Image 1 (cartoon, rainbow, N blue to C red):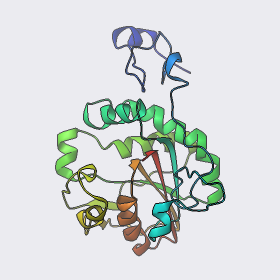
Image 2 (spheres, rainbow, N blue to C red; image 1 turned 120 degrees about the vertical axis):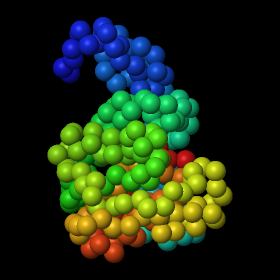
Image 3 (cartoon, rainbow, N blue to C red; image 1 turned 180 degrees about the vertical axis):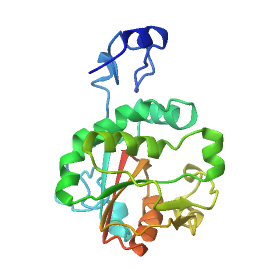
Image 4 (cartoon, one colour; image 1 turned 60 degrees about the vertical axis):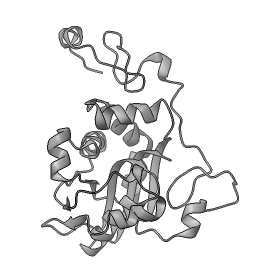
Length: 232
């Protein structure tokens, strides 16, 4: 991997898991954190991609109870420490640079499969303009940019708009999440290609993915998939 030792000396990169300083020339995560990443392993739910305990089951408890608008989910890690702490730092505490590592890992894990599925573009879940001004960046867009750079699948940031400043989903019950997102997203000015991959940081109940997928299906998409760094 290419690096600039002068920049590394002035601005030492930090581990995208523990936030510790990396050694000169290292990128991504430190050696100590390589075995701390809580991968979602098989068997997985055929719909959302979460781990399920019983190998004979096809769907998790959530997906057996509800219909989703998206076709299939591709989460990478469980939303537990230390990765959950790292995502909080990326989202709320200015560690935007972590997106390069996590987007790269998503691309490394699923990139070839997405190409086989015929994914035409990546669509980051948008944030409301007011929140974007306050935070300074959309972490989902940064993840999508990293995935696009690694896979060659183009990113489209013009297909979805967020027009409603919603309450943070983590503060709401399962029942209120969908209501919170009602009419939060609107289509952009272009039509959607037939197979689209939504990109976000965390998957919980699928309310955000369903809300976005519903808009994209109405814009001409035939199938909407979703990938996230974590699921919980």
